Image (cartoon, rainbow, N blue to C red; front, side, top):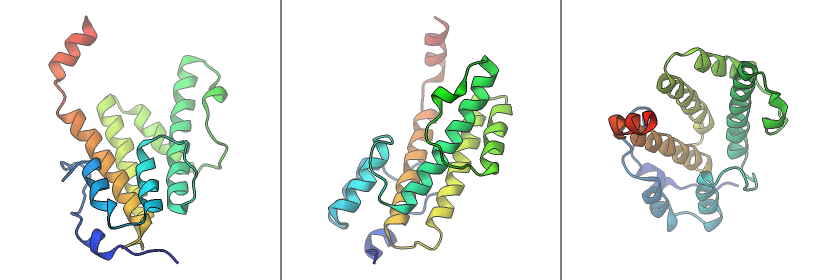
Length: 172
């Protein structure tokens, strides 16, 4: 039977795609520290550590399957443009839903790199909404919340970057 974290989750602010994150991922981890078991906290901490951790949580497994499939579709598109064999870059061998190829192609066809990334992150956000549906006070909700917070932090870094300086560095 899953644990429920009613107090913690009800105290968290709502997240919406495109807003400034209400706090950092580190602060979120600190808020979770004393309110959830260490095993659940370790799962949430592993979200920033890549794909090396064991997938004991069904929601996390579903998320990683989606994200890996999306990345694989992007690899296929980019490899075909460069006339490179994509098979050596593919991760996993899970069946992919056809809509994932459509998402990747839509992002690829977008003329702006920034808009393509925004499109991909919006789709990731929608999948996280699906993962959290029906999970109001459990670990699955916390995982979706943490991943959304990481997306918001990423966009905060993008939006606050010194773009003229970065462009100058690239051109030099």
